[in-house]
Image 1: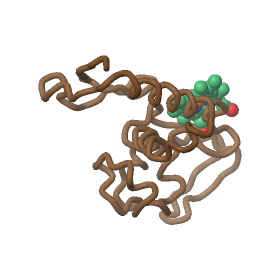
Image 2 (image 1 turned 60 degrees about the vertical axis):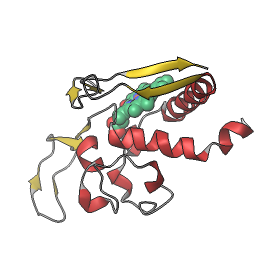
Image 3 (image 1 turned 180 degrees about the vertical axis):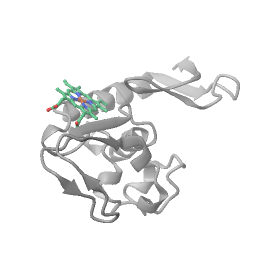
Length: 151
Ligand code: HEM
């Protein structure tokens, strides 16, 4: 556990993966009272369903010092240390935020730490990694390919 705790760069990589390609695209809330958006003044009504766009917030340049379209794990301890708290909500927020987030993060960390001890991943090349994503219940890459070398 202590060694896992010491892998602080891996924490940044996992955070950046969850920011860059959050598995959940949006969270939904239903208003229990009438309300008004503070900046625009837009009127909202009790019963309205609000879509909170996790992916869009994470890619909105007004909330990030380093371009949000760059994959850069060092943004978290660096220039984006004090990013807007709601610009990065891969597990939602408030009372109904993901109840399994600590387990989710822990599993990711253990699995990645184990894999990189025994396996070297390489870039699969431009044909198989042509970019783009599919949005279903979760977001997933449209194309993804890596080479795997067992050490
Ligand atoms: C990387 C992994 C995961 C991601 C990105 C994720 C993401 C999310 C998101 C975005 C929500 C909606 C939160 C909101 O409405 O504010 C959610 C809810 C939830 N998640 Fe996760 N989750 C993950 C792993 C897990 C795991 C491992 C568990 C259980 C072991 C879990 C159980 C739940 C439950 C029960 C809810 C509903 C909470 C509620 O409505 O009160 N999740 N998750």
